[in-house]
Structures are given as structure tokens and as C-alpha cells.
Amino acid sequence: MKLISQLLQLNLLSFALILGIIIMLIENRRERPHGTDHVIAIVVMLTIIVVNASARDWFLMSGFENDRNYRHDVVMTLFYLRTAIEHILFPMIAYVELLLIAPVKKKHIIFIPEIICIALEIANIAKPGLIFSYNKHLEYVDGPLMMLPYFVGMIYLLLLMRYSILFIKEKEMSKGATVIFIVFLTLAECYLEAAYIVIDLMDEIVALDVIIYYFYLVAIYQSEMKIKLRTSELELERSKRMLMISQIQPHFVYNSLTSITYLCDKDASQAKKALIDFSKFLRKNLEAMSHKNLVPISEEIEHTKVYLSLEKIRFGEDLDIVFDIKDIDFILPVLTVQPLVENAVKHGINRSESGCGTVCISTEETEEFHKVVIKDDGGGFDVNSLKDLDGNHIGIFNVRKRLYDECGGKLIIKSAPEKGTECTILIPKEIHDENSGN
Image 1 (tube, helix red, strand yellow):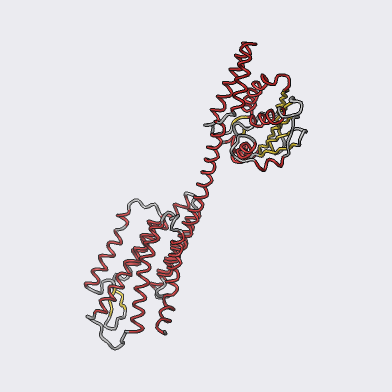
Image 2 (tube, rainbow, N blue to C red):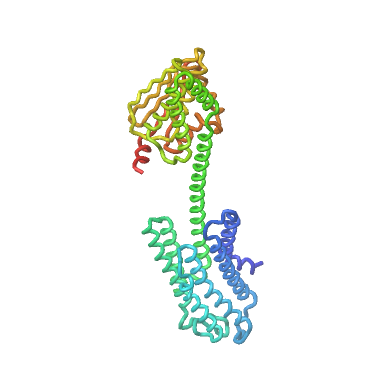
């Protein structure tokens, strides 16, 4: 029990940090942020180092004999192998960290220092003393190339420092700062270890480095996923909009064609004009399906006039139209005014008790907004019924959603049964100016 307690005191932090990394890897196994494979490789090497150190500590506490001559003993051979593995793996971890963090292109060339380290460690096992050796009591003795593992690891750390400076120059401040912290932490440990100020803390420092950078990778991955999700949502909304726009209301097409057929017998010139307006209306709706940018209010007003000219054929003097355009210097999502005017005619004027009425379309500029108002004196409705609207119909829901998504706009609706309806579109000036600048 005492032996286990001593082993835990020496290696508990290392195992705890490694276990923490493994738990994070398991938790994110489905997402697998960029660099996960490199982190797994580092964890495997780090685990080998810690298990290796634990085996050494276990032997020194339980089986080591102070007066025994271990020269030419199998235990000494194992000690040489254990130390060589540790000397090889620490620079290897630094190399993998370099591949993880930096966009290294010449991987094979950069691996040359590690190859030299491996070769000299093997040579040291065959002929001890070049890098290190053990005396007959298994006491570690430095050789002339004792700094080789530190030097090789230092090369990779300095390369990491170089890339961190490039990150900062490229305005990747968080990444650059994270890498600089990791490098300085590791360099400080190397110096303290070489100066015998601290002993056997390198595995804990490396584990801490990996945890810090893995948290950074996860944070970046989640940020990218949020951006992708937002982009996907916008694309989905655009697809819905295209589908909605493409599904022109059958009743309007039927009514327009019926009215044009009637005009063909009554007034050929008016029928010709109506056909031209109808083709313009259809063309605008088809063009809107592929329109990704905001459009000038003048285009929306013009399209609305075309729509109303067709409705006037059917309603005649029962439908009065008033335009009060005071502001034309702004842009907004395509097909936002016409659907609201269509609602005013279809649900307001057409369903009023008299079957007739006036639709007024006005624009004006306020201190904060560009404002469009569509007002009718028709049947009106209970605004609480808007809560039941969904995205399956082109109309209020679609217009309100696109206004918010595409330009931060608002749609405010005021209505009451038999008192008419007022729809107000508000386009923020700041967002409008940014879109105009782009």
C-alpha cells in the first residue's frame, strides 16, 4: 500500500492530465476537430513516457539494491532502453505538435533532426557514454551530447515560435498567443530540467500544453460550426424563399387570365397592355428566385404597380390606389412590398363588407429608418392570429423573416376587424449603409 501511495505521489498528476485529455477526446469523438489525430498520437507517446517512468519508480522503490553491481545486468539494459525511449519521444512529441499547430509543408526535411536523435540514441545504447550512461549502481551520468534531446526539441519549439509570429502578423491573434504561451512554458521547463532545478515534470508540462491547445481547437471548431450552421440556415431560408416565390398563387393567375380574356373581346389594346404587365409580373417573380442581393425600393414599387394594374382590371373603380413616395434612396429584400400589397387587396379590400376600398403605399425617411407603409381601409383582422402563421405561405411570415435575416429590418402590423390594416417596413439606416457600401 505504501508503494502504491508513493507511485501515485510521483505520477498521479501525469495520469490525471492524460486521463483528462482522453475524456475530452471521447467526448468529441463525433465532431473530431481538426488535429484530433495528432492529439491522439501525442497522448499515446505521453502515456508510454509516463508508464515508462512509473515502471522505473516502481523498481527503484521495490526491487533496487544499493550494494548490487548492475553492470551487464538485464536491468541496466532496460534502463538504457527506457531512457532512450524517453529521449526519443519528447522531441517526437514536439515534432507532432509542430504538425498539429503549423501548416508545415516540408515534413520529411523537418523530421531530420529527430532521425539524427534516434540514430545517436541507438548508438548510445550500443556504446554508452555518448549521450548518457549509468554506473554500476544505476546512477544517471551525462555524456558529451547530453543536450541532444533538448536541442532537437528546441528546434521544433523555435519553429513553433516562428509560426506563432506569422499567426499574429496574419491577425490570428488568439492562435498566436496560445502558441507563444505553450512554447514559453515548454522552454522554461526544458531550462529548469537541464539545470536540475526541477525534475521529471516534462510529461506534466506536455500534457498541459496539449490540453491548452485542444481547448483552443475545440473552441475554433465550435465557432466554425456556428458559422456553418448560420450559413446553412440562411441558405435554407433562401431556398424556402425561392420555392415560395416560384409558387405564384393560382387564384391570381386564374383571375388575371380571366380578366385578360374578357378584355380581348372588349378592348384589344387594354388586353395587350394587360398581357405585357402579366409577363412583367411573371418575369419579376422568376428573377427573384435567383436574386441574392437587396434591390432598390424603386424596383419594388415598380413591380407593385404592375401587380396592381392587373388587379385593377378585375376590381375596376372598386379599388383605389394611392402612392406617396418621398424616399427612394434605400434597398431591401426582393419581393417584400408586393406580397404585403397583395394581402391588402386579397384579405383587406376583397373581404370588406363593401368589397371596395383604398390601398395606400408610402415611403419616408426618419432619423433611424427608411420606412415603407402599406395601408388599406378594408376588413382588417385580429393581429393575434399572426401567431398561427408558419413558413409554408408566401406572405407576412416570409416577408418578416427575410427582412430580419437579410437586412435587419422589421415588419410591424396594426389591424383590427372592420378598421383596416397598416403594415410598416422599417429598414435600419446603418445596415442599409453597410450593404450599400459593399
